[in-house]
Amino acid sequence: MSEREPIGVVGAGWVGLVTAACFAELGHRVVVREILPEKVESLRRGEVPIHEPGLGEMIDRNRGRLSFTTEMSELLDGPRLLFICVQTPPTYSGDADLSAVQRAVEGIGEPDGKAVVMKSTVPVGTGRAIHRDAPELAYVSCPEFLKEGTAVKDFLEPDRVVIGADNGDGWAAEAVAAVYEPLGAPIVRTDLSSAEMIKLASNAYLATKISFINEIANVCDEVGADVTEVARGMGLDPRIGSRFLNAGLGFGGSCFPKDAQALKILAGNSGYHFQLLSAVIEVNELQKRRVMSKLSKHFDSLVGKRVALLGLAFKPDTDDMREASSLVLASRLEGEGATVVAFDPVAEARAAELLPKVEMAGSALGALDGADAAVLVTEWPEFAALDWSEVAKRMAFPLLVDGRNFLDPKAVRAAGITYEAIGRPSAVDRSAVS
Ligand code: UGA
Image (cartoon, rainbow, N blue to C red; front, side):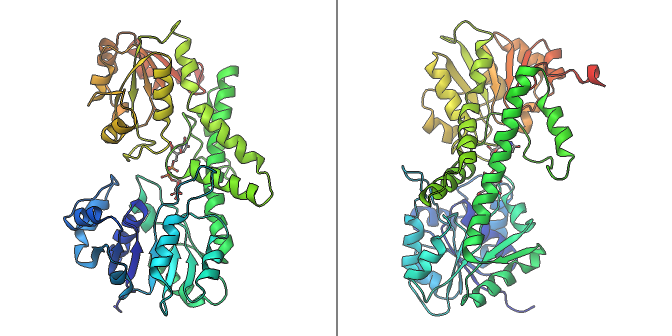
């Protein structure tokens, strides 16, 4: 087999590490440049700083092809393709903060025959602006569509690979297409700005789908329908599709909230008022608080009540707490005078820094001990396997709000627990339906 294209990666965050490990797995030599010396040291020692299934093992397996450095010069000493995987968090104005991207590109300079391959999510127009400032550096937009928790699989089995480049950078686009070619996915070759827009529009669309089903759930609560049944019936229409129709406590994470906001602001800065996205964002903010009214139905006041949160991470299989619904919910509960106790299989340490007043229980049953109410916030599979009779015994008042419509209402109810969900007012007993 011919020697595979060496790859450079700037940034050893979540996207950078997954990208680097997967390219190494595909047989490429990969140099990762990370600005934080302590992170480089720990990666060299074999420690992986994030919880992503399969990633640690993959890094271990490919040690011989992966190297980590703080020096940009080491990165430039070989690979032609330099994948930029740095963070682009929102600024106070809602625009994306591009300072890490700018530092990375400035650090690279304009060496001959090199291309920047932008993985970081950036506003449409960023590629062309960087190209104007550094015309000798080829520029390719190749947005990432990885999901936390399944990122390794998503990388190796993509639905599509999007590659955007303007005239003159055809060689670089070809080279990027060649490194993805073994994955056998459809490759969308397009211009730079369209590639950037595909990323933002994809995330904004998925966020819209979630806010839509959450609003349907809220109406279901009023009119006596079950949103899980509604989603099942809707999803069979291939024009709609069944995925991302799970109603719940809203979307969180490092991507949807930021990218929906970034696209709205980008449109606004360009003179267009993107009304739909404003609603998507607002619905999501309100959805995180939706549980409060469900609890209030059962208590005159939450003052002094002990409320257990099952799950804290923004979704299962990650310890990521960014924009997690649990943050808003815990703060609202504390605001109403409740004591909040929580359990998450992997996110407790991260969550404790953000929620100093919340008691971390270390186990689900520990959190439920003596609780006046419990809220399932993150659908970790182990919560579905809880012994509900034991839960009922442990709780002071057996009330459970299933914030992700994840549990079997019948099993929970059979143990004598009052079950509430999102958009399932009667949490339908299916035997009564069929
Ligand atoms: C998302 C996209 O799915 C990826 O394609 C994209 O690459 C990534 O953002 C990114 O831009 O980096 P991620 O944030 O990891 O991935 O998580 P998702 O699985 O998409 O879930 C996002 C949020 O939506 C979670 O809080 C989840 O609980 C919520 N969600 C998802 C729902 O409330 N309902 C659903 O039906 C699906």
